[in-house]
Length: 196
Image (cartoon, rainbow, N blue to C red; front, side, top):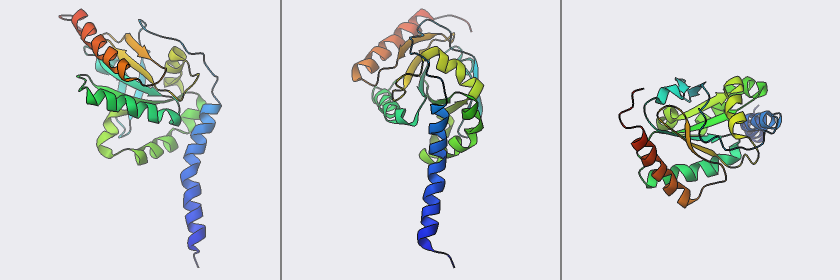
């Protein structure tokens, strides 16, 4: 005979396990000091969308500007959502990708659980714009930006040649969205007519 209370408790525990494992993966990472990578090339890494497609960063966006909103921790989701909303409100004319980044071997080992948990949090229509980086593919990005105070997303504007043209890591502010819009226009003017 099944007991509904026990079954409900079991389901709650099973939902909590992936989040606990993601926390442990992040806790097992070395804390890398923050730094501003503006002007540097974005590392070449292979990401996966939530629907499983491979995306080579930054090569998949060669010839165009792209905005990457990088999260190292689930607590940064609120900040990432504010960035996304602000960018959509100003009708930014550039692709935007949210990138969950979990460095370390533990992150790689937990990737199926974390990806499944993320799929539950987003509608399937968004799965193609949400990227995941785990383990060795996540490490260069974490090293580039640092991971101190991971409750804030790291926001990159990549130029058409894959360099970091603009960067923010101290939390969402409306005025930063306006600065980012200005920088998009500035970068596009600088690359007019360039071949990639």
